[in-house]
Image 1 (cartoon, rainbow, N blue to C red):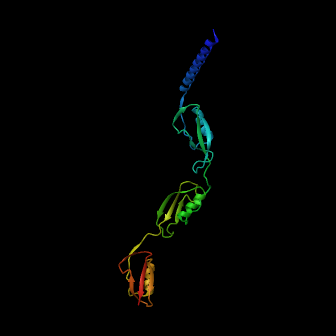
Image 2: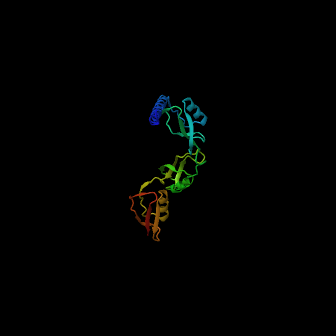
Image 3: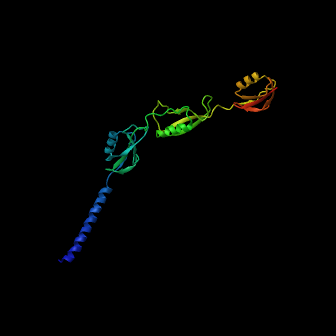
Length: 226
């Protein structure tokens, strides 16, 4: 048989063998057992490895990330969600927790909201929720309380209560006319009103706003004496 005839036969044989081996490999892989991926969140490496080994899988550590709820060295995330089906002998990639980014939350009470956000930003934290409440003791726009507090467990979810100042108390403006300056001051103090006087007399002659007009705590009443 000439060499010209032998070469095509060899090539055909090689192609046929490749097709046969490819088919057999596909069959073997297609008959591989399908298994459920276990839940690994919050598990130690030993626990996770045991669970995966039981299902014919293996553990593959991909990296670490900060988290305030999962202990350092424990599993934070997995690439294939728990309950999904995969072929056995597959590696399941996981991310381990590095623990919280900071060891304690700073004291934010009495700070303005803007200052508190700046303080937290320096520690890689941020305020997740702002609740505004009235307060008779804390100045408007300053923080009344925080959660968590500095002595509590660190959390990335920080809530602050911010003062709206005291509730507005509405009054009908009293009649100051005919009263002395001392009586007017005493009455204004009780109602948390401010007064400004004009004149050198000792009795109130004219007032603004007029008696019966609606006013609120903190408003100024202008008085003229005679």
